[in-house]
Length: 284
Image (cartoon, rainbow, N blue to C red; front, top):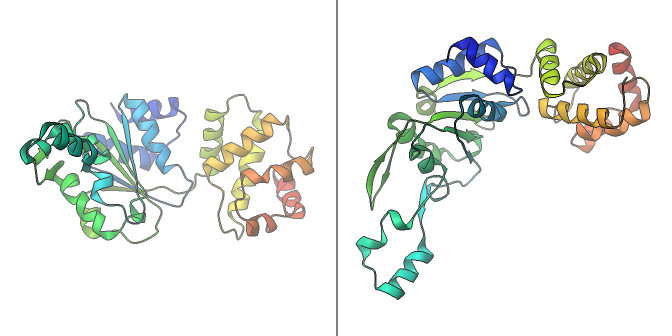
């Protein structure tokens, strides 16, 4: 798949990628290297993996990271209930208990065990502990996993690996060295309009421009949680569903629909009707 073919395929799945991001994805596919995506929450980093999987016809396997994540939840664990039943019913030996029959594959092991290369999304890696990064190093460098009872399991096919991070903590140099890198920021006005048109093709062009203009202006305000692309799409769907064709026509309805954009009480207070009237006036 050429660079242009990749961009076209992503756009066909509703994802409008910047030139830098498209090149990063293209190189990750061509070189077989993991791709680390950093940027603020809500800019579509996770959505990239979904769109890429659909564009390439690959299975998407997702590992959601969190504090305290360990190997048993990310790589594999043994089915202790089945092992106990086997001991009681069959008098199974230790060698037979620790076999593929009783192995429960978690996302990382599942990803390297597929006959066709999947897209492996390691989401919000910066939320996991530093110790968990060490588990990833063998996988990201050699694409193999060592299970003490079974030995080393090499990848049946090499997955396309995408890691995302929101800047919760600094990632290790060792992890960064194993990855290609791209920073994903909030889209510019033209790109965000293109995203909205791709996801909501029936939306009136004037309303689409107004929605994007107001959302981008709100991001410049002093907010705790700036509205992301997903929130923008939710707001557009809500306005369209309520029959709003122009943001200036029904200020009360527009104000009420800010539940789609602003997700804390402080941010709601920071966007009173007076502010919204001013912002809408600039894009009307």
